[in-house]
Image 1: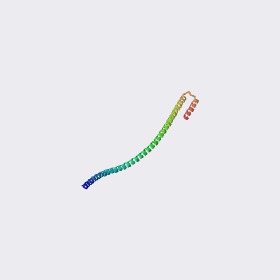
Image 2: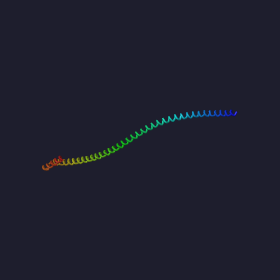
Image 3: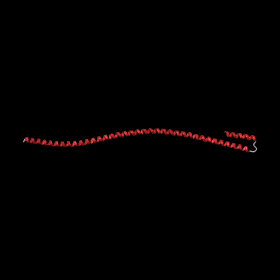
Image 4: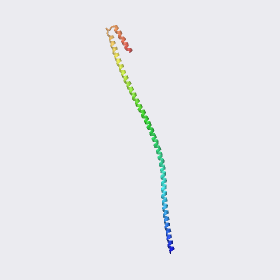
Length: 153
C-alpha cells in the first residue's frame, strides 16, 4: 500500500508535470506566434523606415536644390536691382543734361528772336527813312550800308 500510494503520488506528479508541460507548450506556441507577429510588424516598420529615409533624403536633396535656386535668384535679383538703379541714375542724369540743353536752346532761340526782331525794326526804320522825299543822298547811302551790314550779321 505504501508503494501504491507512492506510485499514485508519482503518477499524479507526472500528470501534473504533463499538464504543466502542455500549458508551457501552449504558452510557448502563443508567445512564438506573438513574436512572429511582432517580428513581421518590425520588418514592415523597418521597410517603411527605409522608404521614409529614402524619401527624406530625396526631399532634403530637393530642398537643397531649391535653396540653391533661391540663392541664385537672389544673386540675380541683387545684380538686376543694381543695374536698374544705375540705369535710373543714368536716365536722371541724361534728363538733367537734356533739360539744361532745352533751356539753353530756348534761351538761344529767344535771344535770336529778339535780335531778329530788333534788326527787323532797324531795317524798317531805315527803309522808312529812305522812303522820305527829303532825305539827302549821302544819308541814303549810309542807310544802305547799314542795311547791308545787318544782312551780313
